[in-house]
Length: 211
Length: 253
Picture 1 (cartoon, chains in turn red, cyan):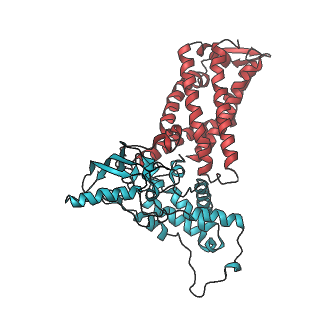
Picture 2 (tube, rainbow over the protein chains, first blue to last red; picture 1 turned 120 degrees about the vertical axis):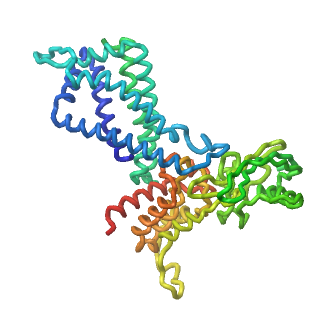
């Protein structure tokens, strides 16, 4: 759970970095080049297989963990400890993960499927042809319902990371006195920055901050 | 604090034995002094039940000084009641006011089956300790305390972990019924000291194996355990347990 979680966290850095190319102010040229690089390089395609394997493994591990842990208490308490003992999102990783999975299905069908199966229009940048991924995001994020669903996805990601980041490191044994403060602070700001970074993309397109 | 008396409604879990199906029963208790302990209040109720020819409520208690870990009770949804870093026996009735309703449940976990009423079987903890939570020493004269130098920081950290009284509140509070805080306290306590070094690797592997065998859940770091621990055992011990487990798993024979 922790190992797959950390590798997925590493992927988020790459993803949010590439997304940030839309703000380069060059009409999407840098973004199109970057997404073409991600879609056409052999090494990245191999890593992509690893990424999908990581996501599936993370889901399977999560399901097994949730089912096993739920079976460890057969009679529920009449009065539960609830938020007095721990934050709600620390106890709701299964729910948040399910929301993220639903989001991923929508997200992949929006962007990954068209780009992988070459149904995108092309654009010529510096005399070379690229799939116009940029035009695709402008089209998709024109729908306010899609924007709202993406923002909900980002909110789920935020809370999933707020717990997941530090929990993963604690499980890997890095949560002793020396590193705990570092992990807490890094985890908090990482979650905030990455989630806002992702959320800014549909917002920027919908409010026409970028064209 | 000024003394006062109160009348309370108690909803207490009653269960004849481990195989029977229990249920809550409601009791009214009157004229309870704010200076009584929670267990003294239970004594008053039991005294009345006995005089009425009824079965008294079975609950665990021993030292009543907050150091033995015998008392349990999940009071209004929190192990050991509302006070921070406190045991049920050290909870006093001044925590409540006249007219309050108090729900009292046993620890709930598959690994802690209810024996009767509020008493659960915590022998799973004993078996985890028997799996490795000790050091092997030769008998003979006690060695001089100063012959084995230990850094002050390590001694303090070890002592903080050793403060665990094994009451099981961590398991009771955890949504996964995980015993990781308990096991981590025991493992940290010995791993930090030179006396624990010879059995360091086998200890953690065997104790974790026994913990899983007993049917405790897996830790998801929700931090509920730390918040209810009467001895304020820190969750940093869990990270330490995880690193001990990973390193021992990778390097032991």
